[in-house]
Length: 600
Image (cartoon, rainbow, N blue to C red):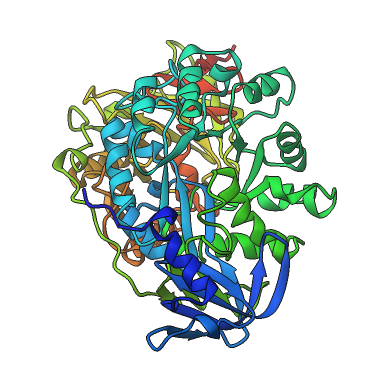
């Protein structure tokens, strides 16, 4: 694998010093801009940036002394010179794109550094899949740092994944060139209980001098939280309120506040800075999960920064939380995150710090995007057949596979029902009375049927349950092999025959998302790589995803980004109620619970 070459600072230090001293000409000078210094949180007018070997040699009021006849001059024309944006926590697979196409989509939005946790593909293909993501990431013209996934399965004993990640896998990955740390430690009960496997993974990461990512999805800020922090995770993005953000930074963690396609957690937490006055250097902005439609239509980290400003944050503070704070957290303050000497020349030119139009983007000293257009190639990895043949159902499914038999003699039952919460990762544990017809339990009103179809080992297993909140009407079903985190197949529908049609269709196309209504396929998004990603451009994938969302609306669903809500229904590490291949899981107690109880 030939990685995208970029010189380390020691290899070019002599030349950088020579340029800064005026003994050698710069390769490029960005001239006449307003320097946004995220170290000192100030804007300094009339500054030039001299660049050599893809790194910043100096930032001075007048760089004419280090210009030569071949120096390329870029006129800033009084615009703001800000660092390239950093996403502190994200999953590329959530964009339904490969690393190359994800990079192509976000470069025009000013994202030049990403810290990615490929635990989606780890659940499907194990360490080999992580290596594929890592290798394509290192081919890109921007910085994609990979965190080694920590939890596959995310909750041992409560789900079955395609592969399991071991402490030995983690130790091996720590030797790879693009690994920056350990991905989010989702098994927070395991850490709090001093589980040997979890602590061994954390220890392997810390021995390598790298950062341990956190994931504490519980409102309990008592002894369990204290034990989790003592276990080593250095950050957390699962906070949903001001108290969560404050608790994390007080314990020495970085609070990562996310704005993804379906997570709107910045506004509720940023008051810790804007109203409580906490030191913002321990806060980081991130996206976590952004699907392709968001990237094409709304933006990426530029969207998050704008949102933080709209929520009352000082634009300079918001930029710090999307640049230098992130770089410092991962030990890369001398490499990225600011427009200062020695750093990679990852730079944005913008005319407005609040609206943040991304007018020109430089990565490693090269112009990579201008006015919304990506100007560079983003090389693709050669994905092997094993990565494109991952949907194994065992047999062709029929409506009978989705039947839920009632207890003998029951006329109705009280069922445990998963309740979807719009724009948030948590669900609600609901109860509902359902009727029995011909010995089978039938959904009614807003309650649809949900099924998890095993797709890794061809067991033919189907787990059936109920879900509320989508608002579906008529005879329909939607199926997806994007099913965090185990990534089996989730099918939600009002009709068992439609559910079978949708599931079999995804087996046919190698994975993705589809919706059937009255026997007709209304939309399909093909994701043949691990059943999670497409190597097509983001605009094409987004167009198909938009068709899917329109089909969901035509079936009565009005939720924001409902396809992402669908994909999270098997996420057995976030409360309250989820579905897995082993049954219905109460994440408050991390126990399997029965689907229903017979009414008297």
